[in-house]
Length: 317
Image: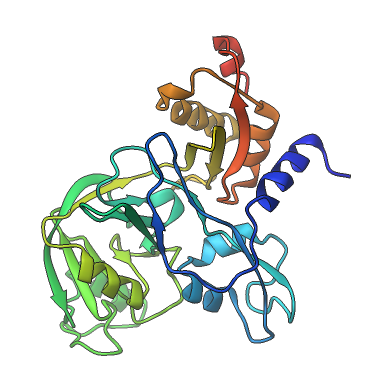
C-alpha cells in the first residue's frame, strides 16, 4: 500500500508521463517565475536495449537513467520493460545565460543569447581525486578534431597501472577528446567529446567535462568563444511550475563517503533559503524527506502556495 508521500510522488510523476519517441535536448525557456522544462517520458525497452544506448538516444547520462529506474537491470532491461526517461528538469538557480554546469546532476544547460530556448546535455565530470572545479569561467578557444597531449600527471598514472600513454595522441577514433574541444579560462580544463559512449553522466574524467560527440558538435556550433561558463554544485533544486513548488534531488558529490541524513537536510535548507520567493509556501516535509531519500533526479511536487511558515517549522526536516 502506498503511503501518502508515495501517492503524492506517483501522482506528480504520472501527470507528466508521456509515451513518446526520443526528443531533442532543446526546450522553450519558461517565463519569469517558472523553473521547469521538459516532461518525463516512458518507453518500452527492446530486447537489445541498454541504459547506455537509451541514454545516447535521448541525451541522458548513465547514472540518471539508473536512479530513475530502480530495480531495472541497466544492461538487459528486458523486452517490453517500461523505462522512465528522466527528461524533466528544474533549471539551476542563478542567471539564465551562457553555459551553466551543475556537477551534482552531471548536466549542462546552455542559454543562447537572444533566444528563448535552453539546451541541456549530460556530462561526464571529474572522478574522486580529480574533481571538476566550481568556478566562473568562459570559453577561450574552440578546436575541431583536436590532438591530445596527455599531461605528465596522467601519463604517470597510466604508467603506474601498466597502461603507458604516448606523449601525443593524434585526431581520430582513438582520441579521448572526441571530435571537438573547447578550452576554458580555468587553466587545464576543457569541454570535449569522447571516444567512449560509456561514462557520460558519471564521475570518470580527470576534471574535464565529457560530452556525447553529437552533443559537443551541437554545442560548438552554437556557443561562441567568450561564452560564460558557470560551474555550480547544486544537489537540491527547488522550482515553481503552474503555481506549484517542486524539489529535484540528486546524490551530493563527496570524496569522503556518503553524507549523513543531517548533512543532507542541512543542504536542503540552504538550497531553500536561496529561494527567498518561496518563503510564503508551506512545504510537506514528509514528502520532502521522501524526495531527499530517493535522490532520483525527478522533480516532485512538494507544496502549493499557502500561508507563511514559522521558522521552527521550516527547520523541522
